[in-house]
Length: 289
Image 1: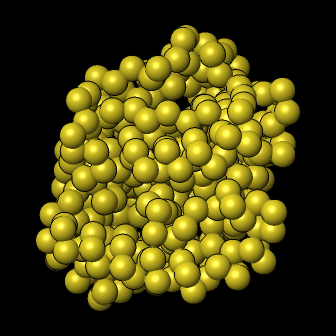
Image 2: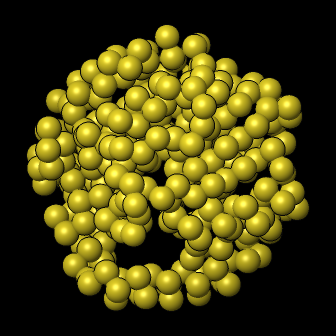
């Protein structure tokens, strides 16, 4: 699919003080939510009430067509990795249910646990989804993030997932490591290894820095301009809010997975840096040894 350079509006948005940017965004997306109500019902039918208003979406494109397409695409990937209706699933960074909706009628005797630091998203999913599908559970985790959860009491590099060892058959992390620093990523991969059963599988996305993506960034053909050095070779696209998008060195990521006895293979490199592919971010398929 074609890619686009970041718009001037995005650059202007990045330059706004956080309080002004938040008010401007809320006003815009509230108006669009009311405008697109008919479209929402056309796309989702009886499950429309399980789809959040646009102004609540903070985990991807604020668009109902994209919400549905994202859900279907990721669900198809899960199936290709061997997801079963009986599996116990962990969704780290469950957000507003973007990956959850297609699973509701597929997971039968299995369970789904979603964790996320953003209170309003977790609360929305609890009220709308868990109330109808009790085997789908959501809980807020009080992990610190300068932008997403500045009052958090635990650093990501020290956070222990609230689950027992070897509890899950399948784990998913969509656009989580794209907002985290290397030491935090390393610790989370350790936690993924801890809670996965031997042979457990997973789907994880990154913005990977390698020869191809670094060339695209230098040539200004990437849709995300990871121009600002962070640490350990990682880069961010916004010096005022580093967590908005962070790319990590591919070899460093592979070393982290290997360190925790997880086999990680690239399922697809993403279109974020100009490739003509279906996935926007780079996708790993993982297996716990």
